[in-house]
Amino acid sequence: MIIDVANHPDRVKELIIFSAIVAGGALIGWLIEQIVLSKLLHLTSRTKWKGDDLIIQSLKGVVLPLFILLAIHIGFNYVTLNAGLLDVLHKTVKVGAILVFTIYLARIVTRWIAGETKEDKSVPSSIILNSTRITIIAVGFLIALQSIGISITPLLTALGVGGLAVALALQPTLSNFFSGLHILATKKVRVGDFIRLDTGIEGYVMDISWRSTLVRQLANNMVIIPNAKLAEAIVINTHLPDKDVPVMVEVGVAYDSDLDLVEKVAIETAQEILKTVEGGVKSFDPAVRFHTFGESSINFTVILRVHEYSQQFLVKHAFVKLLHKRFREKGIEIPFPIRTIITKTP
Image 1 (cartoon, rainbow, N blue to C red):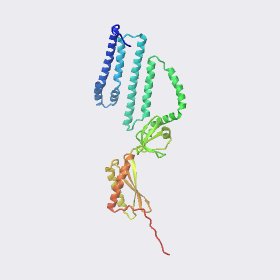
Image 2: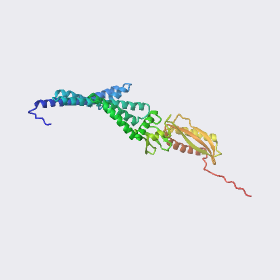
Image 3: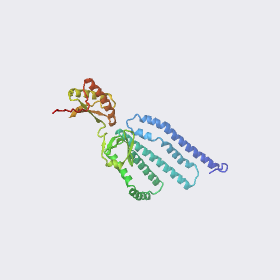
Image 4: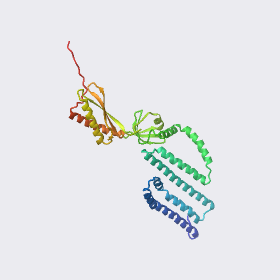
């Protein structure tokens, strides 16, 4: 709408005052976010309680729109508008303020959940964060509708009836959703764990979403597993109860070898590897266990330990190389598979 300045000087004055109030509110909100919040964050970082850091960090991006809405609310007092239109505008600002506060609350709760899981040395799942965020925003939206006089009872009734119809139509999807919640609630499979399924699939759990679980294999391939399938599968979790994993290396020596010397060399080599190679558990005492009289060798197992499943390959690699070298230096033979044939003349 174009305002004739000569014929409506009061309207122009009101518009200028309104614009100045809104601009002032935006400037104050921006200054608070850029200066005041930074100072407060610096102060709260010195305290032991982490909740104050969370509260201040979550205000970023919230203070500015709140001050703009407050300025608009104040500015309405300086403009002449129809009573009905003014009431609608006030209700719109009120809804906006409630939604901004709801977003702020959702941000605090989701960041708190992420912080708690981090303290527990795990990674938050997207199904938890997204479900929490959507629930808080939905409740805030209903409160906003109720605050402006719109009854939410018919809406809740419609959602209940519609939800029943949707549940019947989306049974596989809901099955995956609740299976994902079950997986997260039991904490038998967590984001970041290395798992192995009975189907042979193995890898790191990257995320548990509302429909599927994302697993990254050691070859860097991504495997998408429906949550319902994962809940029914036989799963080996190498990160439970501890991340430490035993490493078994099978070795064979000739029958005429001094087994005491073999054991001593193997243990010393394993100790050196665990202390020098990345991933080895330095405090672990390696062990040697002879177990089989083979066709051409006496076989035994050397037991080492690594901090995590994927680190075993480098430890095995280094151990085999060094043990082979040490056996050659000590004159210990690792025999080739041989077969002795004895013939008798008549």
